[in-house]
Structure formats: structure tokens, C-alpha cells
Length: 93
Image (cartoon, rainbow, N blue to C red; front, top):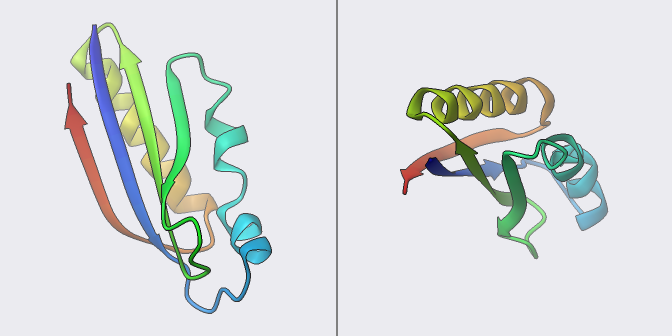
């Protein structure tokens, strides 16, 4: 079994409230949390309006499988989140 912790940091320029922040992040938990091999949470910058950090724990039978899942998560986020990805960290356990 292979496990990856994927952490993404976002900049949300011009975001003025936590309500707007939730709207701009576009329901990441609902979108990715339904996959049984992925756990997701907002892991940092919870009280800031102009930044956010999200962590995904991805589990799979092969390294290739978890790397592919991480790439899919990153690609989908780039297309759907109204913000800039500032940093991506993959930590293999």
C-alpha cells in the first residue's frame, strides 16, 4: 500500500470574506471527499480571507496509482478553483 500527503497552498487575491472564500474554493471537500481512496480537509489559513491551504491523503495499491490520483486532483483544482496555487507538496509515506 502507498500513501501520499498532498498539500496545496492558495492565494485568493481580492477575497474579502470567509463566505466569498468558501465560494471561490468551490467545495473541494464535497468534490474529492466522495472518493474512498482520498481524504481531504482545509488544513491551514482557515481564518484568512486571501489564502487557503488544503491537504489530501491519497491511498493506493501502487506508487503509480497514487501519483496519478494526485495529478488528477492538481489538474482539476487548476481548472476549477478561483485562485492561484502557490505551492504544492507531495509527501510519500
